[in-house]
Image (cartoon, rainbow, N blue to C red):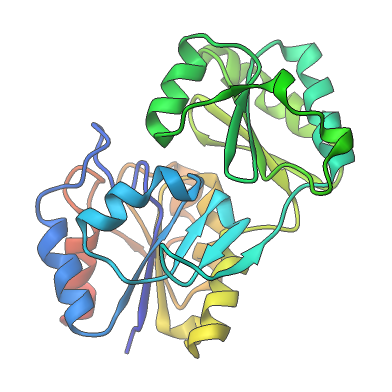
Length: 265
């Protein structure tokens, strides 16, 4: 019996407009009523997912920032918190001298941006956080490093630089596109899979009792980790190779699909 369903948000749980498909609400209620945890497992920070969490009336754990942070619920406690080193953070900032993208950096739940432009404001609107300018923080004086970076630019530019950015990043930093136009950098020691493992240890849920649904490259590790991996129909072809089941598209309601074709069977 499955006890936990972990789902990516953008491109998986949410439709193309960034909203919850209408059938998700009843599916989420069914899971809650039957003691099955629905875990939002996303690259978004905590503040960028609370609205969705509350709209589904969830009480489950949360995985944020691609696995850097894991919470038992929206109020805490924080059971995992892994950041980049300060040196790696400075290296990523310097790397942007080559690519000249807009930098969005998360540090202690605060969003910093390299410039206030359409890319920064668009990202801020998604997260629901008012950004500060990157000049407001001196990483060299901080005790902990950044949680992650997001480079923003046109789809064409992000597509053209993602491979070279990964090659030029420090060895302890992972660079991956979490959306086609989001190039994210975070510590290679973190993953959604590691966060799910920590949650499983805390709640006494084995990986074989978990389902994971995703669409992007940052979902592959958690899909490989769990007992049953589900890719949405709109997932990248490489992601689908790691799935046990190819479900419906994100516009049709993947949680409803999992409940009715897997959980209730």
